[in-house]
Length: 238
Image (cartoon, one colour):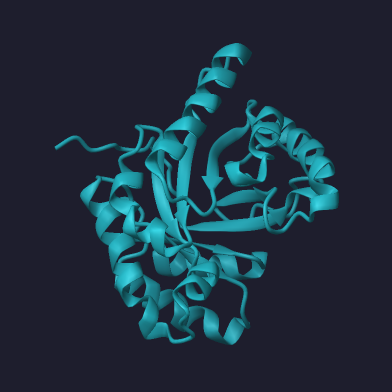
């Protein structure tokens, strides 16, 4: 069986979401292992173009690892996002609401074309996030869609709505499916759902994710990154 091994240093134990339209200096963003500039959910429609400009400037000046969450192809915004962000400084691209391997391969082909046109030497990885029942069902194929899939993760907010569940138990199969798919494909342990709750619940929630087989987590507050790093420090390259 062919497995895909990501480059040394990927993934990270913690990721910090930064709305792309609010991204300025990278100062202060070093608390997490990597920054994820968000052009999707955290950047409103009226600020998408500003978000792209800010993301480009941020990447040009970046001294640490940066990912960008782009808009889904169905929005018609993906190509503009990629044109703005495929440049030196970009480590990987986070793909939201992934459901189809062909879609992942299409995005990979666009990225590779832009890399070639711009003379970029370093490979830009894909971090595939599943957030729907169809995505979870396809996760094994998504994890193997292309050699540039470096990791996978689970978004539970949209998934809970799609499944019609408000109970933690309703996500058990989805969580196990993502962990199993990552392991089977030779990828690192997957990214746990983003934490944006109160600090009191952070440790227990993240420790539960670690026990379930996840290996990293995205946070909205840089102050949370140290706790996530502490818990997941042994899970990245297992």
